Image 1: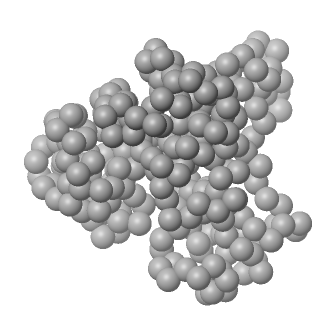
Image 2: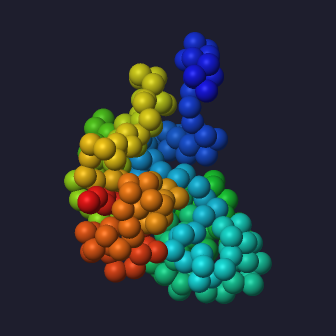
Length: 241
């Protein structure tokens, strides 16, 4: 791995996925500033890991479908509760029924397509979030753009300083990667020996975090006032014992 990273640096190979490049190119082509594109992308990464074929982890055991099956069932009409199931879906983890209905109308029969979701994302920004849209097209502050999207577009339950810093950090990484700035380092992961908090990453479970830090699910749930131990989300800041 060390040799690969060295070669990548020498050859100037950028570290990004195809989806990330597609999203960046789309946003820049629509007139968003580099800071605006990065600020929005930092939030999308926190929400969905920049995936379009993805639904909220918490509901997977209840619905019993993989991400791809969920999309296929919606597209074919076999799953008819897409609009009202309150399940976060897609690039921005759209949840509310009105937004999911509009997404379904826009991407009917191709609900998991990244480019279609991007078109719908822009439709939302233009028609329903003009203040955000204006800022993303005019601002050169990555932080301002990332926080504007966090507070007014995504609006998650946890908007703590830790969550803000996490999303701004992701946004800065995208700005550095795609704007020609210095190559970003990895998103910092707290050292269990020196920190008392942990920022939840995509794919984390409370039991996995408990095992990693030598504690129990019950202790973490109590410290963080978690009512449902199966429900945590990327960017959430957990207090550790």
